[in-house]
Amino acid sequence: MDDVFDSGKFSHGKQVGQLETELAHYTGARHVIGVNSGTDALVLLLRACGLRPGDGVLVPAYSFFATASAVVLAGGRPQFVDIDPGTYAMDPEALDAAVTPRSRFVMPVHLFHTMADMAALDAVARRHGLTVVEDSAEAIGMRRRGVHAGLHGRGGVLSFFPSKTLGAIGDAGAVLTDDPEIADTVAALRHHGRGGRTLNDFPAISTESALPGANSKMDDIQAAVLLAKLPLLEEHIARRAELAAAYTARLRDLPGILRLPRAVAQTPDDRDVHYVYLIETEHRDALVDHLEGQGIGTEVYYPLPLPHQPVFGHLGHRPGDFPHAEAAARRAVALPFHPDLPPGDLDRVCDTIGSFLATTRTTA
Image 1: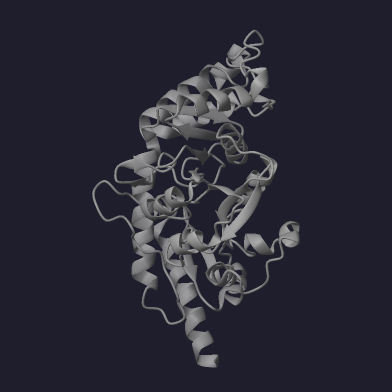
Image 2 (image 1 turned 120 degrees about the horizontal axis):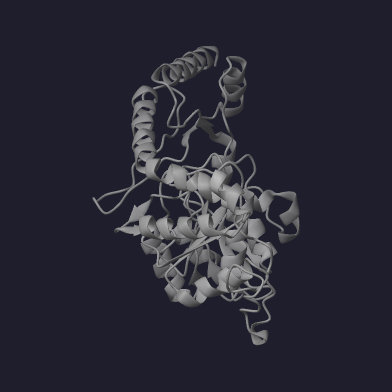
């Protein structure tokens, strides 16, 4: 960080370039383009892949709001798809049924601890002629068949929001792609249409493309923090796996627990990464209140399915249209989970949940 201040180059500078290089090495991507947030990464990726105004983009009904808002900000129209209740990711059969003549893109999301079934989703996409891009904002370190999340379609993204597996001290993000044309377009779009890092590198986008750029550059302070933390990433991922296993061992036989994270990775070339530890219970809201009363924080992911957000009311979706997404929104809660979580704290969380569920069962 001192180097950044000494250089006087506070965004889109040397530290950002070095981070892009190291992330490309870590993920195996041919191109990594640092931007100012995971949300802008999605917007710029969709635009660089040729999204036209009004194009339909199929997205899961259960995800963070940015999944759908990025589609709108890029000029598209979100088309919602129900999820697989085991992975919380887009269900391939539901995707097949949701395709319309308007559909041009499909954007699976890798949530919480595992990737979407990209092989099955890609098969549906090929059958319908859809372009695949990935909302892999939470998925650093996740792989299927040796391929990092975000590299199974035209491109993907990473978010470095402070709570992420690799987090900055503010907003930051990146686009991953193996396509040099997409990489060049995203690199220009993030910097007012310039191809390089100075005022002299303008314009980089031809007038025929009609793609005005934006100010979506990554700050070098964030890049410096991420460069310092990147060598610790594998250690932190391993610790997260230990904590997830400890939670599962303590919680799996408790009455009232409807679902715990399940392993999806099947081969040495596959890897799940626990970003959060999510459980489901019909007593979710009461459990959240009880834990809060005991000084234990939680996070509800996500309290309202995307199709039922007021801003998408004009699309006409009704309760019951996305049953798996609606069940998750009603029942899911994330427990305290980070690499520095002491074992004693984990035990206290589990003991408190156990006593609450036992009392709830008795009174019921």
